[in-house]
Length: 198
Image (cartoon, rainbow, N blue to C red; front, side):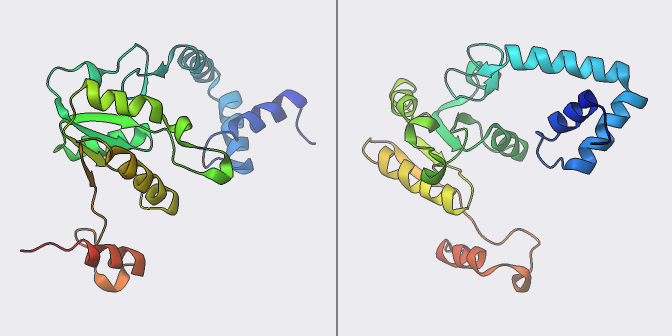
């Protein structure tokens, strides 16, 4: 080990961030120590406050500092629509689209039996009571088009079909501006299966 024990600990701690390997962590640590000590102290303070004060919205399960997030508190959202997503970052993507005005439910992951992640870990005990409480008419399942996301979507649709709520799934297919020759066969198959009359 060529670094002091504390510097090595700093480098290893920075590696917990996604996409940060040994070299990037080393550059970050050196940047903080060489030119950014005040910014590093500010970062440490904010991180400590965030880890202590940010929890989950009691309704949709996204990250927030109060009982309900701003979207769930809003009186302007369509209470009859509920979009189920895997992660809080998915809410950001849907909101940036600008067309959806309903509520959300965040799974905080997807079903993964090999990793020990089951329905209870994804908030299923909270979901059905929420559908009844909010008098939801349609649930839009917007899990990722991965094997785990598709399995989660199937599980959710079977669970919700036991209620009078309509269940839909976001479409997957050819992106706007895409060329067929560059589209993978799985995406193209989804596009053909989900084709619409024009």
